[in-house]
Length: 421
Image (tube, rainbow, N blue to C red; front, top):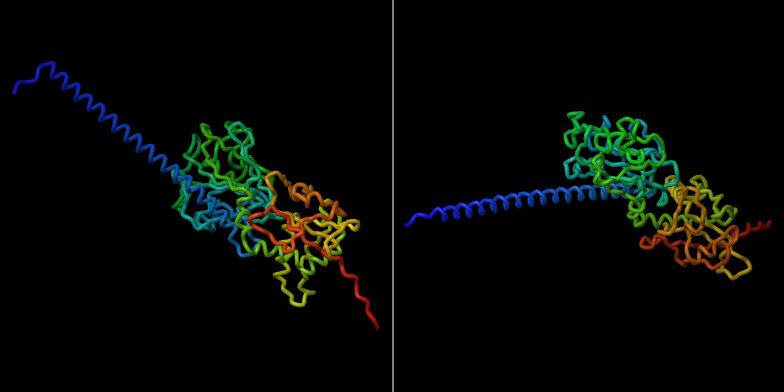
């Protein structure tokens, strides 16, 4: 066989070199593709972890058997020395009524595994003071309760408010943050409980509109200094902030609660309780809602006056009434216009607010923030504008239409009977 010419050898070398370059390029491409796939998979897993944490918290809030105990969220894990890692704290220092609090997600109390972000860090959690389980708020607690968390972007612009809680993926540590192991007992999530080592920015020099994502000045940055609202920063692309948030709104907390059969039943029972109706019949109609003198201690017969005393039922009714009495409106029907038979007054249980209604509890008395349609047009105090209310023959709360008002008639109070001797 003849030997390759010099020109042929050069061509063969060039061809071999081309194959080598193509092979290296393909390997680099496949490596980058695998890296991209791995990164996308980690991000999907992190998004699923955030969603799982959110669903677990909402489920926890809707779980209690007592309707008066629903809606409250567990405290975060703040390294309670009496509890295992991942447990909701008992009562950490400074945890006063209505004070918001930060910590790691209490995965053990939520009965989930330790949930992590795409960098392997366990999730953190911020809960508004009014929505935490311990200590419970001393204000009325219902679907209009205001969350104390507000969200701003990297420019300081407000982008969300009235937030009940936030689940946080802290991301990798930034300059100045130390996540060294504080206790060998932290075998799952490791690290420590200093919020500024996980939530950003670490110092005021890089704050946005004066805000950082923890409570500066408190022990480990975990507990609010008061019951005021606090702004947290959700900013992508910042070299000083890499926290990733998933928000939990007030409506999301109450969505499963209003679907409970005992929620609708309690409203119906209250509106039909003879003792409560008698109270409404004799109530002095006062204030923009007509309910300024409504007394929830008369929501049902007290145990000492009832023929079948049940102290727990009485207490439960009173608690429910006190939490939801902001929804009640009452007025006297007009005598100069036709009215339904055996109907002297109407009482309205206002439904959940619609998107165009902006209620600011606890003392919002603007009827347009609660009532709609004919009920809004007809209602006034102490006497109605008209008698054209949307009165239901079988009043009931409908979870699929939670904004609908429940309107019932109250007959004239019967005069006292005469005693004939």
